[in-house]
Image (cartoon, rainbow, N blue to C red; front, side):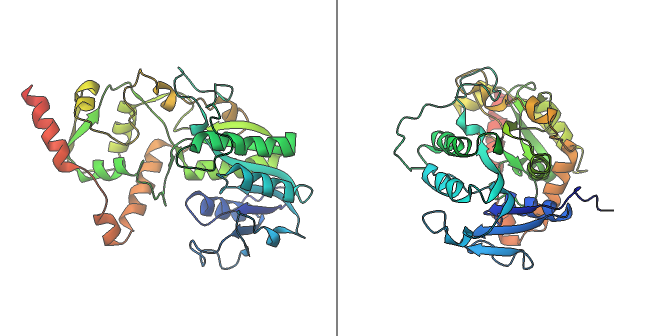
Length: 334
């Protein structure tokens, strides 16, 4: 049975057809809300044939947004401060709440833990729009554009690695796929190394929840649980979704670093200047309604989604099996 929101809302989503957007659209519609999309019409244009789509561009082509009103907007596609400020100012008076999708990359990772009040990255070149070089600092300025314009009617959600069905980055997906492949698997570093990500569906539900409850402020969204999840808990949790014969071999962090071996969701050195990257604290978000589905549910759903992809896409997935076999042989011969 669908448990609809107490009163249906009119929601605008800037973007909406990439990875996280479709999950937000589906969940908002499940909750009984009316959704409008604004995008360039280039990515998956037929994904939601029954949903109103306004065509435009963040870079100076916002006219399609004029003359409309919504209860809230979710900005999933803001990377350049000028673009975010333009949309925030144009929509002021036309939307009740502006929810901005930000990133944990706004933080200086050289900290023991990252709460919402932790030190942010410095703005070295505020005039730059180079999102590759200044991704984190530009997101800081994007956040400021929202909060300066909307005050308490602005909401900022800082995402960690986003996991789940539809993920184009393979950052999280690597582990369910690799573990399901079986055999001798490198477990990198210490068993106690923290691992963090957020299931895309938990994120979508949280964003819609913030709108329904009229909640402002800034929130970290990092799981898979409130308390720290260790690499051992993570790997053995994913192990539970497959019956493929396998074994884990724990390989020392320095040994892997000396061979420049990288693994998804594992950031080395774990006690160096990036030590805070997987120590993001989401207590504030949990206090206002963020929930996490079980680790194994995310893993199994992601694996099943991956299996449904075209063969060409699955064959292009990089598992580094030969590299890992060589490392394991070296490790055992040391």
